Length: 413
Image 1 (cartoon, one colour):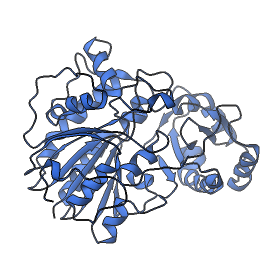
Image 2 (image 1 turned 90 degrees about the vertical axis):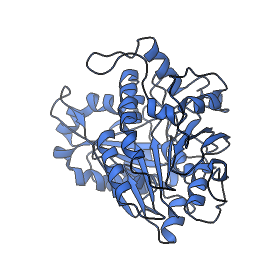
Image 3 (image 1 turned 180 degrees about the vertical axis):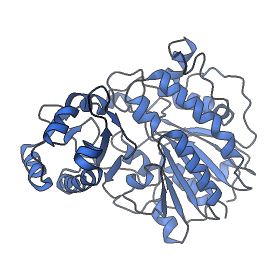
């Protein structure tokens, strides 16, 4: 029994989803469109980056091959040779929706086959009885927003009024979510968290997946800035996941980033967080150092989604991919004989696509580990194959969903 490391590049889809048209996303491809923009000079930004997308370490794990598997289209190779131990493929999501909880739960062996509740794209977006209950039970003088909106934009619109009135800013999106922005000082961070717990209880009957605390600082529209004290209040998974199975048998699950929140802290042994992708990578490396036999380090790198995908920032997304890629050798160096490292994503968020929301896409499944033979794992019909592969690697009995590809990459049967 060795260790497993599962790194989720939040929103790094690779196109090709068979049901993309159902979501209005036929043709969306986060990776390909970022790479295309870079190649054409449309992702050059002085002081940040320029030229073709340069991710040689992910390329050495077979990222380009995974993209070809996802779409059936050839992908220009950078000339990087594949590592002998690398494996590559793509996975199709079967869960309803294209949101964070669905993607992560399915990765952990529990596809979401029910429909989440959503708020209509109207003003107001929330039912009147819910709004009244939020105000009454949350003990606030009222709410601002009550609409679909990008997070940074709605803080710019209502931030000063929020400070003046004490009314929290409540908004939603096409995801099953109710987000609450409030000032860390004027409203209070702990008060925001407690308010979100009240709202979490109130939206449970509506099957809303997450209530998200979105704290910010600054005194004027020009200076408002969201902080990294975000907290997600998610519905707990309805059945045991890979994480529950591991902790039940005595293994540790070290959650890096928002993984703990996504699983409502079920099946989590320890949570480590950092401010931004690079700080999160530091925490992931520390967790790799601390992990013992049978343990799982499950890390989410959220900046790809929140800072660049939703903001439709192609250059920023490209630079973030390149910065992440340059740190992969630090993770490779920590792998012991028999360890398994998998890189994947939970959905897409094509920064060239219309709107500001997630895109329905297949995701890469690439990785390596000393002693593995690697190879092509093809197109996986569910993200749950990832969880089942980790489960087999860590010595768990087969779960209810997913098919392990462990034997295909040279793991013991």
